[in-house]
Image (cartoon, rainbow, N blue to C red; front, side):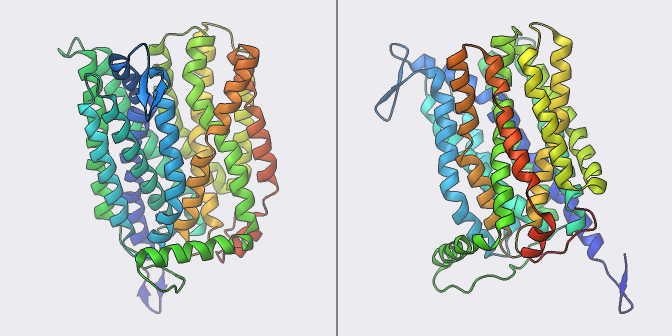
Length: 450
């Protein structure tokens, strides 16, 4: 704490208080990301759809779909919608001082829709599909607003630490609830429950967790007035579209930010594909039981807590860009190990899971804080909406490559190894990013360590 003109500067104390509150939104929404999206929704939707299937097919908008393909179609549809909606949302968020209210509104709306998954039973898979799409859209919208708050509550030099700690909270919260639900589902007989009821209670618990812990950032964050807002005529939506159009035209003025976004699209797509296909690879190629892979998933969650904090510490001395590049080298080593991993050998699988956890939280946390340095003030939500929209709009590319390689080789080993291309290309593009120039272009202060 310093003194300005003889008066104590309380800004650092106020920021620290807001940061502690902000961490808890990652803790809150990770319950949906892990328990619902990551583990339980897909298999349960398939089971419900199979009850309604006629000749092993269900009808979706007139198309005959196998129940096993439903989760992929539902998630793809949801992410594509969010990719279209998020940039407009970002423009709206940047024009209001009530970002914490937007954050809580989207969070509580998403939790409400997620809670409706409890009523997905019998053969009403349609209820589950629609409510998941709405919950996932609210989840993405809240993530944009949450990320846009990061530059408002931290200085440029402190951003890696704050972002990393937020990710650590997220993995800890999501992992804790998932562990509790793992016990409930695995030992449902002990609790006098059917497996279906145990899954439905677990889905409901994620919604309650998300809604309840959102009260902490809602109470602890302040609403910050918008900065450098474009003067555009019209109502709220008209002004927001006007600002969005201006920002799209001005993007060429931020070539460093665009280069990083392109790099992020590649390496993040590789990361997301490894995570989404790891269970399939472990069960189908390595011969492990689904319960074993769920245990590994939990291991990844809890190791990622330490990984996010470790990467934040490394970035403090080596810079975020170099730390991310180091993480991408580890990711490349992970998919290479997948090519030669022995079947039904638990120790190598646990080592690989620990390695994934180590770099998972760190690379994603630092990508968020690094990008925030390249964003001009007053357009945090817009730029983060592009960040999330482009991520979601292209998240199918890695899984497509994985699927094509498997189709041609009939093996998951070359399919998982093929993802090395995403880490190599992403790393090469990131290496080209001129961090100092990008920060100056955005009008931000260049930290001592970049």
